[in-house]
Length: 293
Image (cartoon, rainbow, N blue to C red):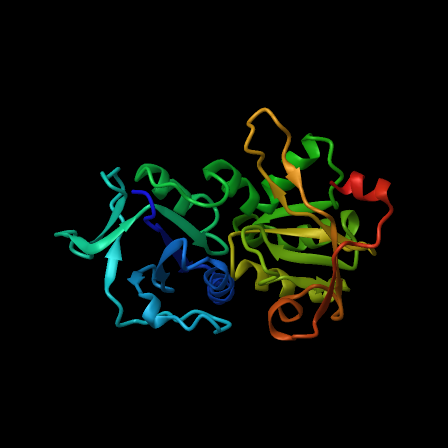
């Protein structure tokens, strides 16, 4: 209806190791959603996977992180299309929650069971529009091993890496240690294949420290990657799909991350307010900027 606000469900939290990061990201999203244009419906997913319906009365717009109230109503999204927008159901599925139809979902979550195509798949089944990448792109982007393989096939240079599954490591740990030392060398980075925000990432400087780092990464995922450590600058761009399906993606102005820690760790990103400097635009020549884009 003309003049009616768009009903935006902001999904945050989730079952991954990046649950707490999501609470911070979603707080930023809600701060920047125009309340004159959008009716915001906050939905927290707790660490057990329960969907908890909040209201904006529960939210402090100036807070750095969003709450996850365990006494909030537990709801579910039926995985089938519904007329008039998606309607959340009570836990027993008996009836829709009153006045809680949703026009679009903004998933603000990080890590597996969130941004890896799983939430996106549910929303596709329910025929609900959502913000962000689709099922395939989300799944590829989450798995560092698969993403690097596809980038390499596309002719993009990638840092040398080895992917290791837990089952293989348990059978031949010493052989894999030797392979890492020979093919990757030190320093190297050990990280879960399906996680972000530097959670579970360890910089390894010697063979003696490798087993501990590998166990740390395996505590978050059944597949890990070991990447060669290289001395470089960290330049990043944001990439958006063009509204014209025939046009190439749109890449932003390059920015540079300058960590003040040994590397851009979880602490540098989220705990230490002075953990890194962000230079936008990055100090690059026009030709270098074009190459990055």
